Image (cartoon, helix red, strand yellow):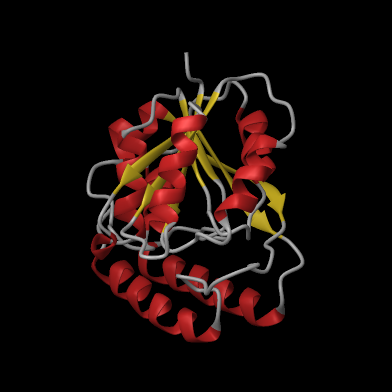
Length: 231
């Protein structure tokens, strides 16, 4: 029986994927069965074909094909819809996060039920910290909810939270991380952190807020979502 399902949204990560698969194969020992669900959102660089071949050789790796025009959040929800685990998680597929962070988060979750465990990034530069703080202040100002490190990965939670609370009205874009935390807070869940490092990409360009150029539209979209949200 699958106990943990980890979802990775993928879009044009062919150069990073072999390194990620190697990290998965060499991950720290853990005492539960795990499936790794890769959701390809319409890659054009061979990511989908690479994952298809790997999934045929490794039964713990599952490929789900999506449509990237819907976005990051949509792809993650697609992956969660195909998950078999009692504990669900998502994280990045671009090597900026460590797969072992997920297993540490699961260990912290333990037998707790009404709890979400997420990453809290350490050793960040001043600009990144400032962007995060401004977003956190705006969320508190508009919604009255105090959150910390909204976009940090991984996110780990139990299946019943997903089916009963998260799945409904989940946004298709990068606002999904915010939506998860807002829903959890409003429903009385504890949000616990684990310290994580956020690494530079080996290959490719960040799809979200990895650069100043990416942060500006991400913040605009997130502010628009906050302004209209009713969680």
